Length: 115
Length: 114
Image (cartoon, rainbow over all chains, first blue to last red; front, side):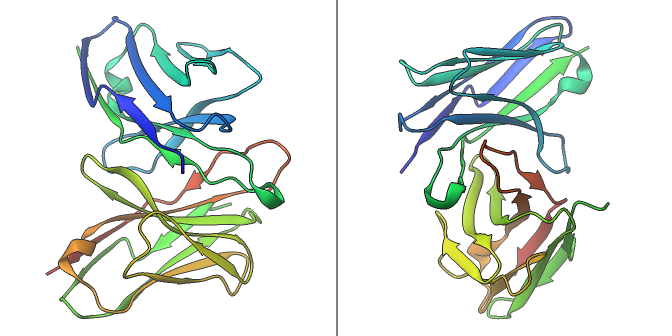
């Protein structure tokens, strides 16, 4: 099955700095890559996603890049703010019979933004 | 529109007791999932369902059973709770679609087994 590795497990930055979280996946058939943000004690929520026919996607201060050849994708957060502090999860999934997909999650990155 | 609702939010059990966690979604989603979240382990899939009346095993199914009798509900059962099942449990749902669709998560159930 699919295996997703996520690094680093903890990332500490100063407010205003950029943060980069990297994930690698094992199955070349994976074609959908969502990123979720989970604040302390809350539910995971989608912040951005990318499909395999696109190399980069941006939404304000957040961007995701995908390298299908190397099988890795990254989350980039610019001008970090204290409210960006949370655990971030990457995931990879592929289409299955019937159109369903079952994502495999990375272990998460705890991002701490110091004021 | 409540989204995904999980009950209960917290529960403490003794080893050997049984219980059922309920997940309800009002978005008419076809797919539903149960995950457990442990420190440093991310979200691990327990069981999932691709439609009413169908269920399948995920990564860590042992010790759990599920049922999807109605499209909007997905139940997770622990027949004989063990301390290793102490965790935070999340339910999620997603719609069927030609393109991948993100998952919508509930608020979680914090379960402690003594």
